[in-house]
Length: 354
Image (cartoon, rainbow, N blue to C red):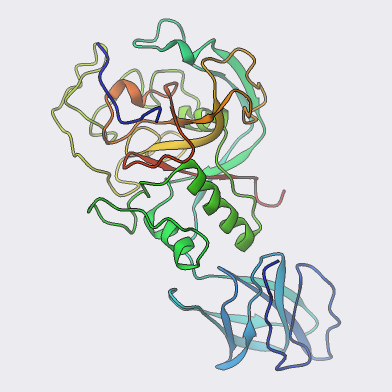
C-alpha cells in the first residue's frame, strides 16, 4: 500500500569613492602598478556594494559584482579592513600588507555555504527491479559517470536565503510556518525562486553555484552505497526526519515518531560522504525536467533539459514523507513556480580552482 505525500506533482551600477588616487574598482587579477614601499590590496564583499573602511577611515564602496574588486595601495604593515551594509552584520578583518605585493581578500557579510568535495566516479543510477516499492520511473537502472564537483553539506537555510532577500535580489520572503528561521532549511520556495538565489550568489561570489543535476544529487546521496538508503536497506527516525508512523518493507522501523515540522540542518548524522539530510527534512529541487523514466537520459551527469519542463524533479523526501519516499532512487516532481512547506534545495558548484 502506498501512502499520500505532499511531495506533489505539484550592469549593476558601480560607485567607488575617489578618495585616494590609487583607489578604484578593477577586474579581478588586473595589473596595477605598485608604488615604492606599498602593497596592493584588492577587496570584494558578499554581497557587494558595501561601505569600506580601512584603519577607521571611509575609503569607498565594494563593487556590486565579484568580477571586480576595490583596489587600494597601502604602506607595509597591518591594516584593519571593515565592511558595512544595511541589514547585514559588519565584517572586520586585520590584513598584513607587504611592500611590492598584490593580494585579494573577500569579506562575507552574508552567511557562507559549506561545500563537500565529491570525487569523480561512476555509479548505477536508479533502483534495481527487486527494490521494495520501486516505481517504474526509477528505471531502467543505468551507469552514469561524473566529473568531480562540490555539493552543499546542508540544505540551504533561512539565514542564507534571507540574506538574498535583504539585499533586494530575492523577492520571496517565505513563511517559516512558525518553526523558526536561522539554521532551519528554507521552505515555501519554488524552483524558480531557487534560480533567483543562484543568480544573486553568483553575481556576488563568481563561484558558479547552481542546482544539482538529478544524477549529481543521487550520486552524492548514495555516497558509494547501492542499498535503498545510504544508511542501508532500512532507515529509522533516529537517522532522518520523516513520518515514522509508517513502516518500509519488512524493516520493522515504525517508531510512531512524527515531528510534523522541519529540523535544523545537521540534526542527524551525515551520509558516508558527509552530507546531511539527503533523506528527509525537506524535498530538494534539482535542475532536471521531468521524464517518466531514464530511457535516453544523459550518462555523463548533465541535467536532462528535455521532457516535461513544466515539471522539475524533486529528490530526498521530507519531514512529511512516508519512509519509502526517502529512498536514494525515489523521484518526485513539482511545477517550477510551486512552493510548499515540504520543498527546499541544496546547491552544487564546480571545484574551487577550476
